Length: 243
Image (cartoon, rainbow, N blue to C red; front, side, top):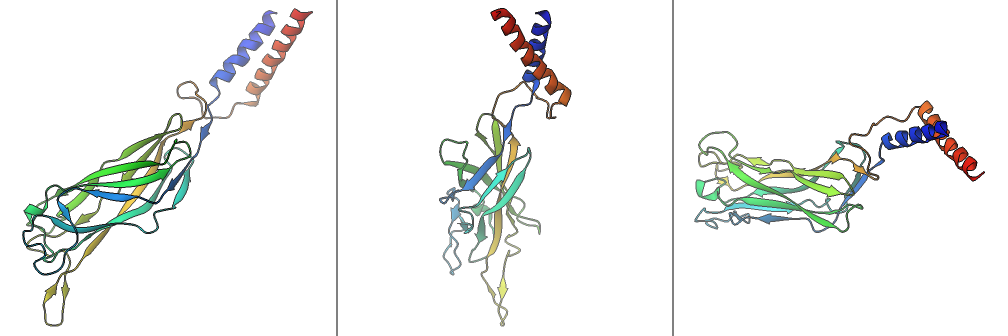
């Protein structure tokens, strides 16, 4: 009887240290993704005098035509993929950036995602702010920095969503884009920067809860034999008791 009890105890202990099963996560981007813009942005404007006060930044923000319906599956920890979310096209009649145009430039890219382990389709908003540098040098003058967003799914899974950082170089002494005609006149142009959405599997979803930091290796054959012996001992103990 003591031997049977020890075998049962050993089998139970081995079962407790077996790794929990981790599942992959399938991601689909649905239609309906969009941009949400702060009050400092205005639509692209290249007609003469269309932005005479120069208090808003004229830029067209668009969503990539191939975004909706894109799908992928992340399987292993730190797996990642990128897809074009959209773009910002700087388009002003003077092709220049002045100080009054650099405020209230908050922006959020809203992704509409389907993840099977989530209850419903969800909107993920990745928010950024346009930051300016000196407007009097030849370096980059404006960039939009986005803060990563963590999406929880399943039991313990985590997905990190981030956007790339678009940047432009336009200032009063240096136009960002220009087209020079045959007679030397400078005409308005447009500079487009693509924004990529990056998905990273930062935490695996465990289908069954296990102990902290479970071993990732497959049990040795000897361990499996020990489990079988424990279960056999449990059966023998029950027979003797019933006899």
